[in-house]
Length: 300
View 1 (cartoon, rainbow, N blue to C red):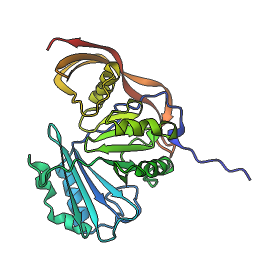
View 2 (cartoon, rainbow, N blue to C red; view 1 turned 60 degrees about the vertical axis):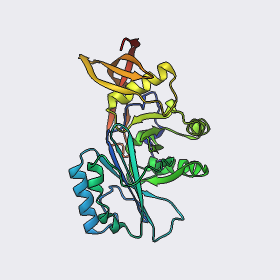
View 3 (cartoon, helix red, strand yellow; view 1 turned 180 degrees about the vertical axis):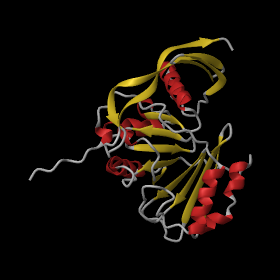
View 4 (cartoon, rainbow, N blue to C red; view 1 turned 180 degrees about the horizontal axis):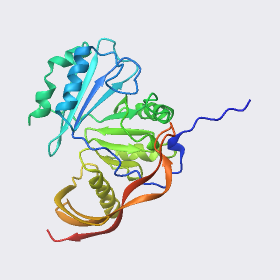
């Protein structure tokens, strides 16, 4: 008897750009788990009621906070890693090793997220979180696990599996840290090139989704500016001014890089074809994105 093969949303044709697709946040809390990941971070996670209540309070207190669960095979059962990041003009980080997850309640992370100081000096470890959460979408496990295993072979990076980070149709997806840059669509054909870019501290434009602390429009503008000028250095800061000019579906935005100012005109468009945004096939939709109309250097 013939059976219908499973549908994978990330296997749809990829004529639609993936830059500018990260839901913005400026604070990230990653908590190690020893259990299989569930569909939602704060549901059926085997944490105590006290810890879940505290995490829910953090989410309410900090609207720009994202909480992830992370895991790695072979880790000691009595060690729980906690990673925290925040963007305050630059990115600050801290990490802890706990004996149990409830010890997170003693860390006063709400004070750390609220303050302009850090508990510890940044470790500047090159860390990667790869989404492998098949409970949320089958593509993330199907394509995320091979990516996680491949990247784990590299000693330069501290690689972890993580819970849902958005973008099923762009699976496999990942975050590089501490810079909080999202990538998607890193399949086997792109793997070698992607790893080379990371090792050389370069942005991989073919898989770039965006930086978490930027708006989606700014994420798109960064992609277009880097592509236009071939600015691949991952440490090269690009800042955006408050200036924005809106005319119908065209936005003009200014960016500063290497002591030079650029004006970009972006057009908000919808994809010509509709795609499913997840494997459940519940929503067939046009995808909106920002295309580049013009990019030119202007006087400071």
